[in-house]
Length: 151
Image 1: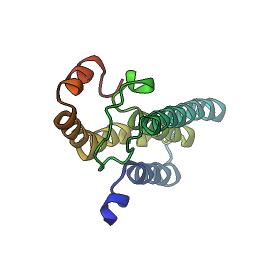
Image 2: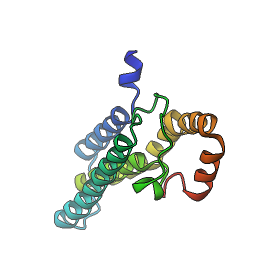
Image 3: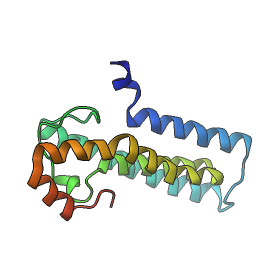
Image 4: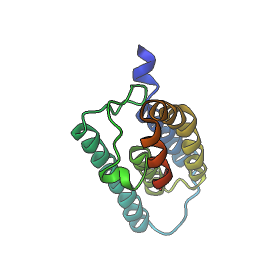
């Protein structure tokens, strides 16, 4: 039961954000394009990621299905931001991670972005897709052929 609340994407995102913060404070290697640009770019990514995730959550709630990655989906949601990506919340998480890394000017932590994508795919996306394909069969196959996993 506790695993359900600890092994969730926001906890993983927080862990990666902590690593980026640690790197920025203890091993600073900046991009040197100035704090204004780092703040602007970082803010755009964080804001865009939050907006994308919020729109996805609204769409999931509107369709009365769970947003928890370990739960069984009640509906196959293909509208709204789910037309752009099969995993808009995870895309939003990646954007937030990238935005904070840019804001912190934590260049070495840019390597965390593909690692985070890999962790999310292995821990959550692949299992979710198996459950969705098992439950929604042909509809899910059609959806996955029309809509990319990320972008």
